[in-house]
Amino acid sequence: MDGIERALALAVGWAWGPPLVVLLLGGGAYLTLRSRFLPFFAARHAFDVVRGRYDKPDDPGHISHFQALSTALASTIGLGNIGGVAIAITQGGPGAVFWMWMAAVVGMATKFFTCTLAVMYRGRDSLGELRGGPMYYIEVGLGRRFRLLAIFFSIFGLIGCLSIFQTNQVAGILRQTYGVDPWVTGWVSLALVAVVSLGGVARIGKVASRLVPGMCLLYLGGALLVMVTNLDQVPVVLGQIFHDAFTGTAAAGGAAGIAWATVVQTGVKRAAFSNEAGIGTAPLAHGAAKTREPVREGLVAMLGPFVDTIVVCSLTAFVILSTGLWREREAGVEGVTLTVRAFETALGPAGRLLLVAAALLFGLSTMIGYAYYGRTCFGYLFGARLARLYDVFYLAMLVVGAVWSVSSVVNLIDTAFAMMALPNMIATLLLAPRVISATRDYFERMSLL
Image (tube, rainbow, N blue to C red):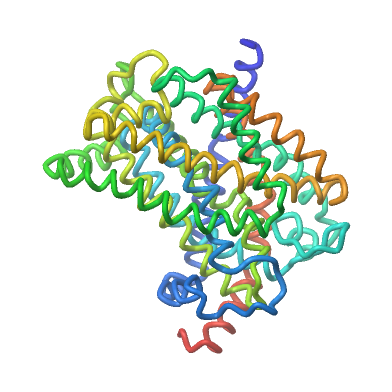
């Protein structure tokens, strides 16, 4: 196992080198400027769409706008927000939070472009079902000569969409808090996810639309309570974040210091894990929305990075940084268990219970959403008729993830995400002019200009 861990550590270091960081940050900045910030001025319209004002049951697709956003958020507002932020801070210091914010801001534009494309260039699987996602807008939008990019994305999507991080973190929190054997957590997760995910995207959308609002309110309520009771720490925490974002001097675990490049790399990497902007997973959900308006769905998708990174991740970071526990980590206390310890320090036993409940809901929602993503990738590669084979593999890996080491799980998923981002961002940048044209047309028709 040591050999595998070393190999994964080398792989993630290579995959998340400067070229990919520049592609995600620079590509997102380019898309933001290329759109002249138009999507950002339509936030109110996006909320109207989410509320169902423009829903038409007869439009092509499988789920409503709200269910599409809920499915995407169920996958992003997950343990990447409460466990991933803790990992970002311990690996990159408080400054990593700033770069998570920057990645989220440009990530909003990236989400808009990719999810607009997901509806603009939908395809059909081998069973004739309407599907959307990077593999389809690469092949349909760019042509079959780019099909290798679509295949490349789908192959790594089979790995990146495994929920091994989620079961790993849920197992960790239950083991640390209640002494539950990780094997038990793995098998229970398998059973719960199977009941929902095997029902297809319609059932996933319905469950996600019920889970997401409640779990968000539960978690945000607890985090806001910590902030209100520690208002004097807000300026201190903000000072740490902005200072260390450009100096890289803060260090976790007693190390001498963290290089500035590592701070940036860690922030961008964890933002990608948190909101998945540029990775290509969200278009798989939004591509299933019932709509004839690609731009409309893109505007809905744009809300995702704001909610999960700017709001949820920021509150998580404040709780962790205000307690100072990130500097004095105990052995085995990392990821979500560090966040639990921070909430417990701030709110006592009630904080621990709140985090355990939130982590379980977050973890379950992500496992459900990712099941659909992976199945879509498998269906594209091998045919939708054989997708049940992936279901078996996906469910079995939930158990494996529960008992594997945190570092191996994180490095494997990070590497897969990097490989998914490359073809997705290349295709998005090449197809950007078509999105701009469609956006101007939509804004004129809807009197949004």
